[in-house]
Image 1: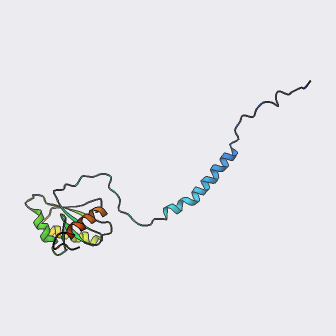
Image 2: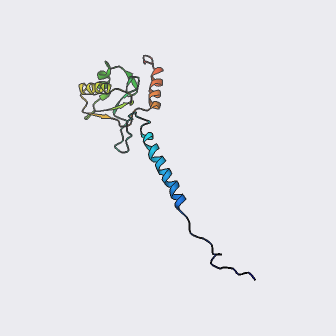
Image 3: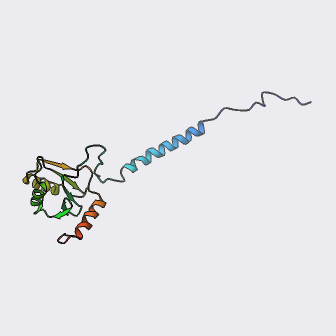
Length: 154
């Protein structure tokens, strides 16, 4: 007759978390070493997107500047010398004339200052710089639209 010990037959039901803790610590150290390299990959400064604000009315005068420096007043091509005349013509009899400047992020701020000076010379009371830059689709549309117009530079 065999004698069995009941205490030896009980199952071990506790979980040993030491190996799990070791794995988490190794992963934490790896992430601490690798994380700073993610921040230094892109040093370029991008224009921030606007999450709120007012919508721009389409009835206002819009000056668009593409990344190659081409200027458009309400979709018509223009040069820096013609800008004041085009703004005067587009102003009409509006009581509080406003100019909206949409520029690509690659445009130099000196060009935007030139538009500001031209708007001031044309007696515009308000100038709005759009928070969202002129996107590639709009640039291509303006460029293609003015290619078909006689006298359009493109």
